Amino acid sequence: MVENSPLDIEEIVRDSFDENETEQLAEKLDQLEPEEIAFALEAMPLEQRVGTWLTLEKEQQIAALTYMRVDARSNIFKQLETAQLHELVEEIDVDDLIELLDELPDAIYQYACSRLDQSEKRWLDQALTYDDEQCGRYADHDVLILSKNAKVRDAVRLFKKLTEDAEYQEALFVVDRTGRYVGLLQGIRLLGQPNHMPVVEFIDAEAPVVQGDMELDQGSDLVARSGYSALAVVDSEGKLLGRLSIGEALENVRRSLEGQFMHTAGLDEEEDLFAPIINSAKRRALWLGINLLTAFLAAWTIGLFEATLQQVVALAVLMPIVASMGGIAGSQTLTLIIRGLALGQITPQTYWTLMRKELGVGAINGVLWALVIAGITYLWFGDWIIATVISLAIVINICVAAFSGVVIPVWLEKMKIDPALSGSVILTTVTDVIGFFAFLGLGSLFLL
Image 1 (cartoon, helix red, strand yellow):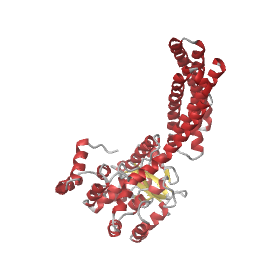
Image 2 (cartoon, helix red, strand yellow):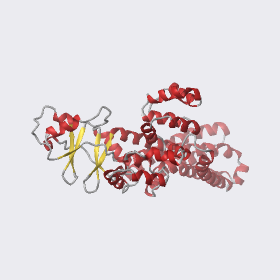
Image 3 (spheres, one colour):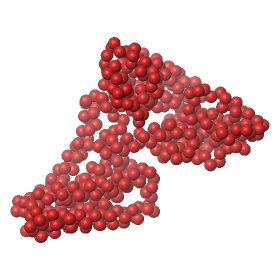
């Protein structure tokens, strides 16, 4: 996320409500980077957002849209006339079109495609062979390409053509006559070298390569860790598709982390802050409904022991402790496993080692806190049987929580379901049901 001072954003949003501040607003926006403009636009209600966006130059409009959340820019498109959309995409480049194509109306997308030249159409066709979670879809075509038969002087000449606003262009991408990627050539390695030397002599053999079918998160992480400003993206035949720069990689990592955070609440990271009420209500209703079903399941479990609760009121008082301890223990394990899955650190070879480790942690913490809770319960109610029942339930629930915290995200991953989105809901249900069943079941066994 681009860092902006709250005062700057507050001033820009305030000016967007005042028609007399239109000129000053345009001047302020003109001083911002596209990602900063996008951030400011997302902080505005829809009417002010569209009006402010229309004051930008066309290049700024497109650049800001590419940095905005999907839902936010989709809401802008819905407010524009067909003629405005035609004008917007008349000179759009293929990389920006790929970023926006899912939100553009089909007729506008077809019109934009008709404006592309043959090379851009070929790039677009290549990109669309990959899905929207693969690196090949978003390979940047703004690359410096050089033949492997070229000399140092050819590389130097190519570097001299760079403009001041060129980003992450510290290296050339060397290809053979068929377009197959040969290697990466950093400009700094050419300093002081004779002009007649072949460039293949200076190729960096250690530079990693991003495969086009690689997951975007995985490719972005590879670039971020590589130490290079950009890496080549190649197809299954080794042909150069484009590059993935460090700027784009870090943006992808940020979006992924934001997505994981939003998913813990059952929300979409692409959701617009000022989305229409009905749209937001529909999105959130699903997980509220799922949560209601799980709550009824826990309530049904409690209802099985209604007679026990009527005779031993202390159990009703202590029930939340059992569920809470299991829930916290499980969420700790769940968070750890989800992070491990996201980073690719959990494999079939390490799964059972990790399971034993988490069960061991659960057993130790379960016994430790069971003793503490048993002591407090005895001082409170003066009954060793109740104290024993809750201590056993705590041990059982924390161990089950540790087991579930490992199994649930791994199982969801295999089912192609995002663990960050669904894991916490399922885990809470398991710890509540098992906790109540163990506690009230033991209570019925020992107290009645």
